[in-house]
Image (cartoon, rainbow, N blue to C red; front, side):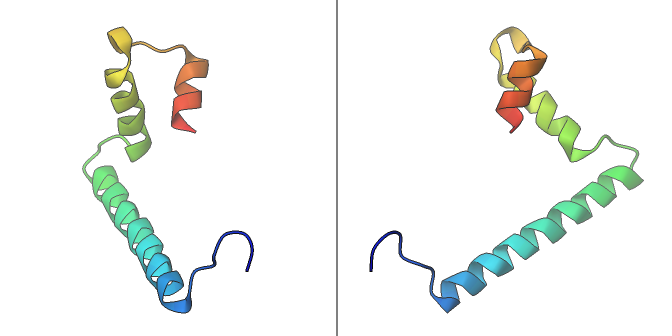
Length: 68
């Protein structure tokens, strides 16, 4: 066999369950934030990125690059 080994069925199922659970959890958290009148998770991601930046500043293009 050449190249990268493929996931067996068990590992594939575990990854699928992890991704599904992660999406559902983030959706529920997002819903709770919305119900509480809080900003979306995306805003917190931006704020954390700016907090970690030198002098808490980034050019918009640099911010976009770090978030992708």
